[in-house]
Image (cartoon, rainbow, N blue to C red):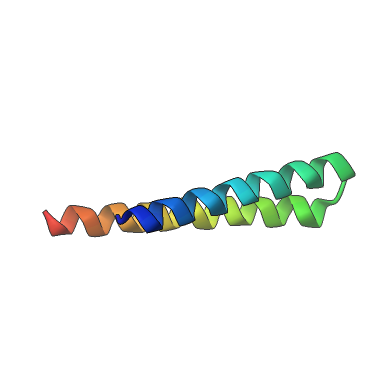
Length: 57
């Protein structure tokens, strides 16, 4: 996993957490769900990069 990918994934995860928190604070279920989806996408990308790294070894 390249450094750029790690930074991008971390940013997406933080954005997701912020959206989720804002959704909870405003009782906006749509924003909360969007934040959770962003976090899930970030986790899946990280897992995919780890698999690619494992095959490079």
